[in-house]
Image (tube, rainbow, N blue to C red; front, side):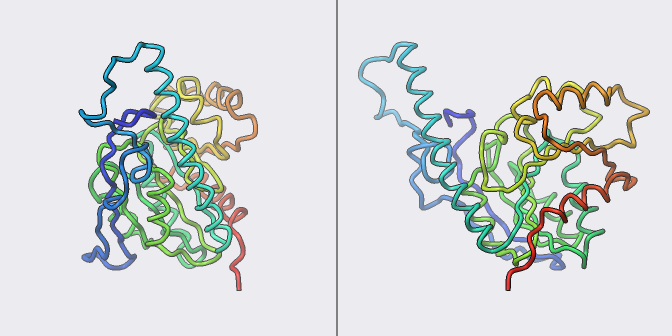
Length: 285
C-alpha cells in the first residue's frame, strides 16, 4: 500500500490506440516492470513497500509511525514533483500543451473529449492519455472519435502520476503545436496531489453529483485553472444550486475560470474550445 493515498503499487499497463485503427492495439506493456518498487507511490521509482523481513524489531509508537508516514509521503511527492518538472520541460521544448482533466467517476470526461475530438477535427491536433484502473472502453470511445489515445491502466491505483504520464507522452509523441489531454482516474482526492507536468488543470463538476463538491473536496478545486460544470442540460431535473456552487468554487480558487457545458447538447462547448485555443502554443519550426 502507498503511504500517500493507500492505493496499490501494482505496475501500470500502457496501450496505444491510434486513431482510425479499430482493431489494432500497437503497444501493451507493464509500466515499471524493471523499476524498483521499494520507495514510494511513484509506480516504479519510490514505493517503500516493506516486506515481512523489513519490519522493525521493536514496534513503533504511534508518534513514530505517524512521523514515518509523513516522511514517506514527502518522499513520494518530492520524487513525483521532480519527474513532473521533467515532463513540463519536455512539453515546453516541443511546444505542446498538456491539460490534466480531473473529476469524480461518471462526471462526463470521456463524453466531453469525444465531442471535442469530433468538432475540432482538422482544426486542432488533440491526443489523449486515458487513465483508468482497468479496461479500454474509454480509449476505444475516444479513438472512434478520431483521436490518437494511449490507455494507462493503474490496476488498484487511484490516480496517474508523473512517471506514467512520461511513458504515455513518449508513446504518443505529440507534434508541436498540439494539445494532450490527460484524462485522470475518476477521483476527487488523490489526483489533486500529484503534479503530472501539465500546464493547466481542469476540473469537471457534474450537476448530477450535487453542488457540495467544492466544500467537500477543496484541494481538488483549489488548484484548478478551469472548472467546467457539466451535464447542464439536466439542471431542470436535479437539485443543483449553480450560484452556491460558483460561490464555493470562488472560495477555494478565486482565479479559476468557470464555464457551464453540455457535451450532449453542445451548449457552452465553444467557450471550452476557445479556452484550449488560447493556451495552445504555436507550432515550432
